[in-house]
Image (cartoon, helix red, strand yellow):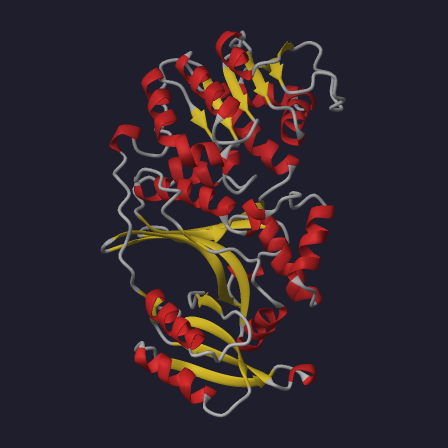
Length: 437
C-alpha cells in the first residue's frame, strides 16, 4: 500500500471539524477506496481551546495557517478559513509554491485570485481542487472539468444560493414576507447575521464566475456580472407570478453569444412546470447546456457542514488516488495561461420578456401614459392587467405588465420615464421571465 496521505486543515469551524470527523469515522472505507490511508497530521484555527467535538490532539497545532502551509509535514493543505485576502490567500499561495496540493471551499478567493493561483498550481504540478466552492455537495466542478470532454457548453445556469432559495420557497408556500423569512433563516443558521452577501447576489455571482471560466475557457470576471438580489421581492410579486404560471427563483446565468459572454444574477420567473422550479428550500441546482449532451441538471444539498465537507473529502480522495507523474487536469479545464480574456456580451433582447409591477395613483390618464412609455421604448406588451391595491389603499392601483421579447435597456428606460412622470406611489418591480422548460 502507498504511504499515507498527510492532510493539514486550516480553519476548524463547522465544515473543518466535519471534515476531520468524517476522515476519522470513515478511515477504513476511504483507505479501501483510495488505496492508502488519509491522516490529518496538522491543523490551524483561531482558538486552540475550543471544543469542536473531535479529538485532534494527534495533529500538530499551528497558530499561523501560513506556517502550516509552508512548514508542516503534509501533502495536502485544506483551506477552510474564508475571505479573498489575508490568511486564506497567503496560506493557499504558500502551500502551492511549496509544491503541496490544495483543497479549498473558498469561492471568494477563487473568484478574485483563482487564475493566478491556478498558474502556480500548474507550474508546480500540483492539484488545486475546489468542488466545495460551488453548489456545496453537488459534483458540478468535476462534471464540467473532467466528465464532459468534447462538449461545447452554450449556457450554464442555476440556483446557487441556498439562503435565497429557502426564503423564496417559504414566501410562496406560507404567504409570509421577505423580512419574516429572513429572520427565520437567520435563526435556523441558513443566513448570516449580516445576510447582504447572500441576499444581494454576491455569493451567487462568485460561484457563477467560476462556472463561467470552466464553461467557456475565459479568465474569471466576477466584477463584470449584472447583479440584483431578492430583498425587494414582495408577496405581490410571488402571487402575480403564480397567477401567470411562474415561480420566482434567484438564478445565476452565463451564456455564450455572438458578441461575447453574458453573466447575470437576478430574480427570475420560471414556469412552474419546469424542473428548475421544483428545486425548493436550501437545495441548489445547476443546469449545463451543451451541443452533444443537451441539457444536464445536477441538484442536491448546496450548503451546510455535511454537504460542504462531503465535497472537500471527495477532493482529498481524488488526490489520494493520484500517483506521482500523473498529468493532472488543468484547474479551470484549460491551462491557466491559455484562458482567454473575458469579453462581455453586448446588450441583447431577452427572449422570455419581462414582468413589470407598478403601483400607481388611481387617476385618469395613468394607464394611457404607461402604455405610451412602453410604445416609445418599442416594447410590445403580451398582457397588461390593472388591479385594486386593496381596500385600505383605494387611492392607488397595481398595474402588471408582461412584455414580449425586448432588451433590458428598453425596459429600464420605459420604467424610468414612468417614474419621472410622477405616476408611481412605490418603487417599480422588474423581473425577467425565462420561457425555457
